[in-house]
Figure: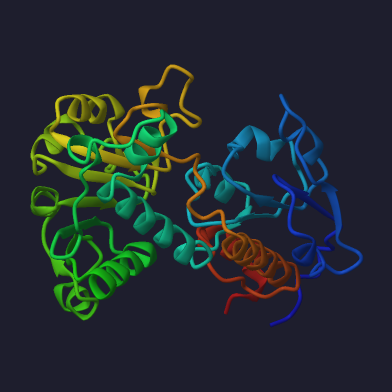
Length: 335
């Protein structure tokens, strides 16, 4: 494929600092113009950027894009692009990419760690010992085994499938799942029983959410659906905070309908100081770090830079999430 003649990359703006070994992938003429956004005006230094390596904390709106007139590419580390206005980017001919394979293993392992921590009452045991107590060996310290329990998965993408694999093969759990883009044959090959969403929610001893944030999935787990879960079940959300009605979740925890919840995402983020999810005795909460491992971070950052280098070398990068913008930007190369 021929190179794009009108693009000479000089400026890359980083929402967050990249690892030195990842920055070393850039040729000498690629200049990083901001390694850490200033507080209060997170993108004020990005005006000259031709490419942005984006994370999850800045919202990439049309106004931000207009403030960066040279911007051609937003390379998102991770899967989610819900903080990027894709319509605005497409209208301006700005290509957006992501790295959906980057966080899979780290996020799946985090999910499984949450599941086991909830089942084994690790938070309650740790808090008990920190308070100078030793038991009692009953009540809130009494855990459960996961072998033979039912894991319900809402979403059977990369992460959901990896969670299914670990829990089925490693722990002997039964796995049921739902996904509108998956066939029964595909699910069966992964060892997953495919069912409709309501059935998955009702059957699960542990219900784990792996769906994207869309208008259809907003507050997917509302008061009505949570009420259909087994009494004493656990809810896990490592996907997006908007999937869960947090007030309904708290009510179910306080009423004993649910035995616990493992959360890495919230709505809004971060949760406010008064949010009971921060301190609830039956909630294990982490600050959106499921993919934050040494290996996961390096993988996502490297993939983002690879997409950036491909784009500015005139090659179509992997994982373009708004292909219409790419087609517009490279119209001269189309047959």
